[in-house]
View (tube, rainbow, N blue to C red):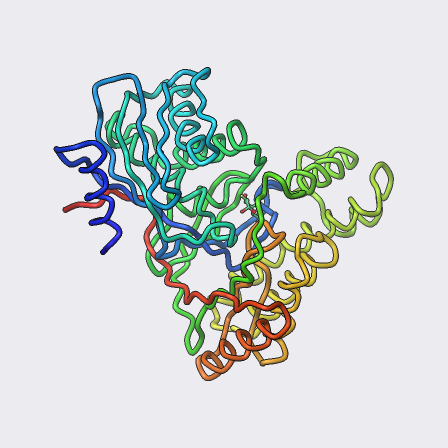
Amino acid sequence: MEMKDKIATVFAEKFGKPAGTFYASAGRINLIGEHTDYNEGYVFPGAIDKVIMAEIRPNGTDKVRVFSIDIDEYAEFGLEEKDAPSQSWARYIFGICREIIKRGGTVKGFDTVFAGNVPLGAGLSSSAALESCFAFGLNDMFNDNKIDKFELAKIGQSTEHNYCGVNCGIMDQFASVFGKKDHLIRLDCRDLSYEYFPFAPKGHKLVLIDSRVKHELKDSPYNKRRESCERVAKALGVKSLRDVSLAELNAARIGFSDEDYRRAKYVIEEKDRVLTVCAALERGDYDEVGKMMYETHEGLSKDYEVSCEELDFLANLAKECGVTGSRIMGGGFGGCTINLVPDSLHDGFIATAKEKFNAKYGHEPMVYDVIISDGARRLED
Ligand code: GAF
């Protein structure tokens, strides 16, 4: 059964008729620019064709009643700060309601059923998809769409900070809200200026190889990485690492550890790589794009230390197979590699990756072809 039909059936079972309104928002990939967002650098993400979808209907009370099809659990909560639900998945929706209300917006009681096909813990931002779906839906349903899209992304980000324990940047929620079919978004995380880049690499496909090593950013050292960057910026007397060149970092090695130095070095190099990749993409220079991807992987693995054995194995294997570019994607500590694969190598690379990964780790990785798609939206009948 299609996702929308399944949601409609379960919604009718749980909450009766009439039907509600359907909304969806997307997971994301990021071609390059990892861990640069909270350093006010550039990122280069796009929304994908994997979504979280929800049916929502006001219920005339001050309670939210929500059923998650994938988790097979029900939650119910009020809309005041003291009403936070205990289930971690429901806190995302509670957080979105609270962040809208804190900004002077309106949220009233509603019934909702949701489901999705964004793989969990794969680095594809299933949480941003969930946040953006409800931020968009509740803005449409209770606020006449008066909250602009920038604020919708910030509402998702604040939900992570205030209700989910992840001190994330803005990239995931921005991509999920602003995603546009067949386009990547070069976003300047300092002022949120952005540009869409058409993305249809000739003779290549983007492939995600999911190691199925699960990560939870909340319990991973993600927040610690951010603290390292902030310590270095503070020691150098600047607002963020965006304002620091490699020469400046190398010239001032006082006030932070060698470990912090390596974290900062990676971020400074990465912010330049994003611009190099955007320019290379415009000239159709995929070899340069791929070279930068491998450099990012090396930096994330050795200097930023957010990779893991399985992901290093996959990126190395990609190189051995002649894949144009490969690197760990997202926050790290598990999840996927993103691979820019020549069409001629596509099937062979996937077969080899499955076979060799399985031989070493005892399970096959999941493989997803990436289709760049639209972000948050209302689904018409
Ligand atoms: C996670 C975060 F949520 C993003 O803000 C970003 O920092 C990313 O990791 C790393 O680039 O997805």
